[in-house]
Length: 173
Image (cartoon, rainbow, N blue to C red):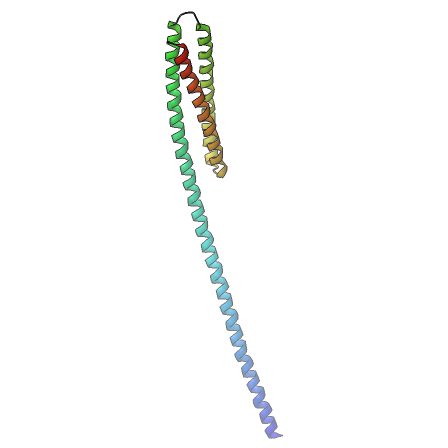
């Protein structure tokens, strides 16, 4: 019995020691896992911050490009409008110097062209105001709206310019 008690006691001690050893091992594993979670969260936060900065930089670059493109378009348009205004002034002088034959039609066409040009100037000015507002709250739609406006505006300017040139060529000599 003494020997059995001794064996049972030794077995109890061995089991107790192994339990403490396992508990320490489990605690260490839990600590390691918690450290890994904290480290992973830090990496995710860092990656999110880097992504935000890259996205912000890309948005700023896109905004800068839109401003540059708009300013280029605006300068070209202003130049074309000034050229057409000068051409209309020349036509007006030539109309006044021309004979009575066809003068009324030329004046009528001249007035229509002058009005069309004024309308285009006003559209450009209104779009310029809208662009300045859009660029403050910049998003992807700004680019698409500008492309659409620029395409339509250039088309209208080209048609008006051709009509003015045709009037000048065909009717004023």
